[in-house]
Amino acid sequence: MDKNDIKSRAIEILTELLMIESLSGKEEELIRVLSEKFRERGFKIEVQSVENCAGNLLAQRGKSPLLFTTHLDTVPSWGHPYYLNPKVSEGKIFGRGAIDSKGQICALLLASELSEDPMNIALFCDEEKGGRGSKAFVVPEGIKWALVLEPTNLHLAICQAGWLEVRIKIEGKSAHGAMAQKGKNAIENFFEAWNKVLELPFFTKEDPLFLGTRPNLGKINGGIDPQLVPNECEALVDFPVLPDFDPQEVLEAVRKTLEAFKGKIIEIIDIEPPWQKEKKDEAFFQMIKEVWQRTFGEEIKICGMPAWTDALSLRQKGVSTFVLGAGELHLAHTEEEYIKVEEMLKLSKLILELMKVTKEKE
Image 1 (cartoon, rainbow, N blue to C red):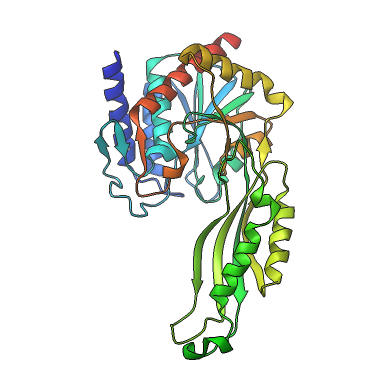
Image 2 (cartoon, rainbow, N blue to C red):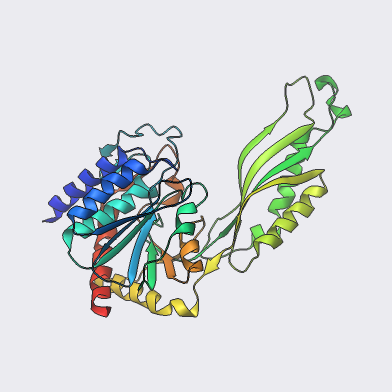
C-alpha cells in the first residue's frame, strides 16, 4: 500500500468510527464493530465486564509485553456541527471523538492492518465519566508496558496531573436590587474567593512540563433576578494537582480559603493523585525515545499530561505506562474537534515500529 492508499484508508476507517455513537455507558455498538474488525486481522477478542458499563474490549494477536490502550467513549455532541456526520477538509477530519479518541483507535486499526506482528490492544469504557473501565481492567499475563493513546500533539507524557473536582457553595445576603448595598452579593463573593484560591501555591507554581495549567471554573449558578441580591452561588470547579503535590493538601487549602468568604465545598465529585516517571520506567522510556529517533530522525518531545487518563489506573496495577497520541488536547470536547490525517499516520507508524521492537524483545 503506497502513502496515498494508506491515507485514504485512514480516512475511511475514522469516518466510519465517527458515525457510531458511543457515549459513556453506551459503547456496545462500537465494541461490536471493532471486535469484528480485529477478528478480521487475526486477533482473539475478549470483552471484560465492567459494572454498569458496556465493558472493555481486549484484542490480542500473538505475544508481546506491550499494551496499546485508549478509550471507546466520547462526550456528547456539545454543539459539534459534525456529530455523527464527519467532515473531511484540507487534511483534517472533523467530528466528535476525532482526537478523543477515535483517531487514536484508527491509528491502531491501521497499524494492525499493515503488519501481522504481535499486538495487544485494550479499549476502555467510561473514561469520560468515572474511568470505571480501566479501574476494573484485568491486565493480561505478560504485559510489562502500556502506551495510552490520548491527544498530546505527539509528545511523550512522562507524568500526569492529579485532579480535584468539587462543587462549591458561597453564601450571601438578600436585599432589594435597588438597595444592593444592603445585601451581600453571593456571586461577587464567589469571585473574591476564586481570586484568592488562584493565588494558592499549588496553582502558581511554574512547571516546564505543564505550561499554562490552571483551575477551570466549569459552571456557575446563582441569583434569581436583577431586582434581588443573590444570597447563594454554586460552582463546579476542576483543580489540577501537579506532581509533587498531594490532592488532599490541595483540598484542605481550597476549603480553608473558601471559609473566609462564607464558602464551603459541598461535594467532592472526584479526587485523583498525580503520577510521574519512576526508575522502573526507564527501560520503556528509553525504548520509545530510541524508536522515535530512528523512525523520524529527531528527538521526541517530552510533556506532562494535564488531564486524567487511564494511565493512572494501569500504573496503579503495576504496569509501566506513558501517554502519547495525535492531536491537540485543547480541541477535545469542543465544537471544533478535529484530527490531522498526517498526525494520525505518524502515530500509526510509531505503533508499527514499537510492535516490531517488542516482537524482537519477546
